[in-house]
Image (tube, rainbow, N blue to C red; front, side, top):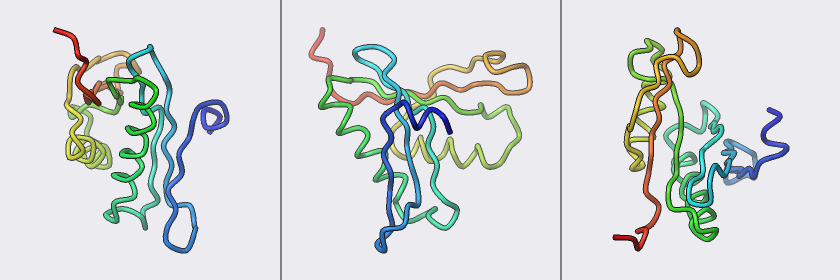
Length: 124
């Protein structure tokens, strides 16, 4: 993927050093960043690779002053069962569904925006 060459990318490795997942981050504003793309090999599912990747991404982003992590994925109105697992994963790590954009990616691909606060903003 071309984005991995130009955006910060984290890689998860198994105990034997083999790459099993990655997460590419994109800074959208001074206080918000997006998981541009993330993937874990099928063999790596259920082994906390994704959870650890996201945790490391959050630490990296908070150190840079980012307060909000966002991710876009297919909305629940789309029938693909793989994306149901994707949404469940993001919800399990504290990311809340915020808004559906029915036509952002085209009429057959409704986009769900999910958001996770990374740190208290310190604002009233």
